[in-house]
Image (cartoon, rainbow, N blue to C red):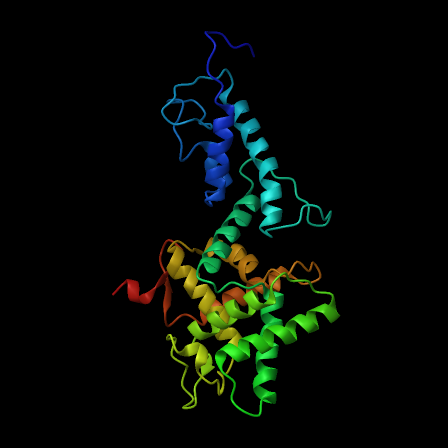
Length: 291
């Protein structure tokens, strides 16, 4: 189609910056493509990327929007790889993203959830978390004298690192993973003091001796992570089950069924029924928010 009229400033680069920033903030691709959070070209016209406060017309705004989004998604792939969301270099994991792809939305939602957990230093990947859980148990079982939280964390990190090397599992920093996992366990109240009650999460916690782990401490810790996301984000719904599954249980092992992990998410959520309710619109909400 031919465009007529005087030359217009080329805001395409700015459009790419805007779209990339919106996607990085977790806004679904479909909403960005529709221009949901941007300006519109006017009644009856398609909404596409538009630099705020600038008047611009295009002869084919629909086509312009599709091409802009395609470029943004192509540019987004290396960023997703760097953040561990997926590995598009693996043919088994490669996907073709269409405009408004639901799969991309889920990846971005998972990334938002992972970043939320990381900000409070309680995120660890599923496989490393399970390996650390096992070593925490072993250190406590084998220890002649009660070890402190700090020493337990350190010893578990060393053991898990050695075990991971034998199994060919690579992780850049086991010390960080161990501290984050222990922090989540402390917040989940599964680290027990001498009186059998949860160790208080105070400034003295790292120096306190550990006398045991609560029954089903794995379940309680992962349920805490779910509840934390529900409280922190405030907009987790039944449609987020897949994103929650990828956030907490993704192992990058295609032999493991993600459907089984989705079932685990549902089971853990059911265990929160005394603290979380499902609102009529499908949003998970802490009970104490309604009081």
